[in-house]
Length: 452
Ligand SMILES: Cc1ncc(COP(=O)(O)O)c(C=O)c1O
Ligand SMILES: N[C@@H](CCCC[NH3+])C(=O)O
Image 1 (cartoon, rainbow, N blue to C red):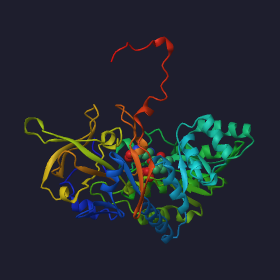
Image 2: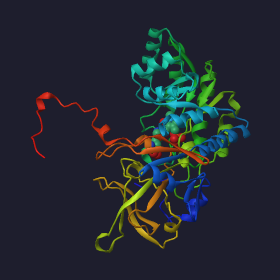
Image 3: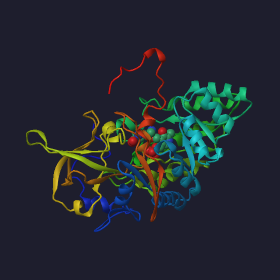
C-alpha cells in the first residue's frame, strides 16, 4: 500500500529538488551535506552510523512559524506538542521553552513531559485505552484536560475522580466520520476507526458528563489523522464539531474549548507541505464565531523535517537477473519503521558532495534485517553510491526514533542535536550488552555446555 500522501507518480525528486525544499539542509563542495551549520560527515566521523540528528534552530523556527500563522489569523490556540512524534527530553524542553505544552497518550509520555519541565497545566491526555493507573496519575498531576474517548471511559474517570477527591477537566473526543485522505493506517477520524466517540452519541454523552460527579466538561476534541496536506477534511471535521457545540449549547450546556488535534502534513516526496496559515484559516472559518478557547496538537509538522537519519552503505549487492542492485544500509526497519509499515517515502541524500553528483541509477535501498519488508525504497533513483558511502534519510524527526526497536539484536542508534554551528550527543548509542541486561535466566535452565 503506497503512502497516499506521497504518490509515487512522476520521477523521484533529484538531489537538487530535495535540497531546494529543505532550507535547513545544504550541500557544500568540501563539507558535503550540512544541517543548519554542521557538516553531517563530522557527526558521522565522531559518532558513527546509524545516528539520528535533529536541528534545534530549525525546530524553533518551525514552532514560531506555526504560532505566528495562528496569531496572524487572530487565533491564540494552546499548542500541545504531540509527544508521540518525538519524545526526547531535549526536544520537549526546546518546545516548552517556546511556549508549547504536551499532548500525551500514556502515563509514560505524561511522565516524560513532566521530566522535561512541561507544567502539568499544559498537558492534555488522549488515547483510546487509558488504564486506571494512568488516569489516576493525570488526576494527581492536575493536567489541563483528559480527552475522553468513550462512554465507558467517562464513567470510569468519574469514579476515579470522586475516589481521589479531585475534579477531572475533560473534553469528549469526537469521531466526526470524516476521511482525512491519508494512509489508511494513520487515519483516525472515520467511524470504522477505534478512536473517539461516535458523532451521533456525543451530545448526549456530553450531557451525561455534565451530570456525573468529579468531572468538569470543557468541550470537545478531535483528531482525524496524520500527514494531512489538504484543508477540505479539516474544514469538514471542524464544521461537524461546530455543529455539535451549537447543539450542546442549545441544550443549555456550557462549552468553552475546542481542541482541533494535530495531523498537519509535511513534504516527504514532492507534496506541498501542509500550510499553518491554511490550517489557521480553516479553524477560523469553521470555529471562529463560536467564542471558544482553541487548542491544536501538532506533532509531525513541527519535528518531522528537522531530523535526518545518518547511515552508511554496508554493501552494494548486484541485483538478480539484471534487476537493480541492492544498496544495503547499516540503518534498518528497526531504526526507521515508516517505509516498512506505511510504504512511506523518505528522501535519501549522499553526505559527500562528490557522491551527490555521480550519474543516477535505479537501486533498491534496503537494511540488513532479515525481513523482505526491511526496505527504504524499491527502484529509487539515486546517484551511484559505493560501499562505505554515507547517506541521510530525510524528514525522520517525527515517528522515527520513537518507533525504533532492537529487532535482530540491533542496539538503538545514537541521537545528536545540532543548534546552528554546535552539536551534542543527546543519547548515546545503546551498548550491545544493554540488550540482554534485563534478561533473567532461571537456575533450572542449567548452564550452557562448556566449549570454547
Ligand atoms: C490525539 C492526537 N493528537 C495529535 C496527534 C499528532 O498527529 P501529527 O503528528 O500528525 O500532527 C496524534 C497522532 O496522530 C493524535 O493521535
Ligand atoms: N506513526 C505514524 C503516525 C501516527 C500518528 C499517531 N496517531 C507515522 O509515522 O506516520
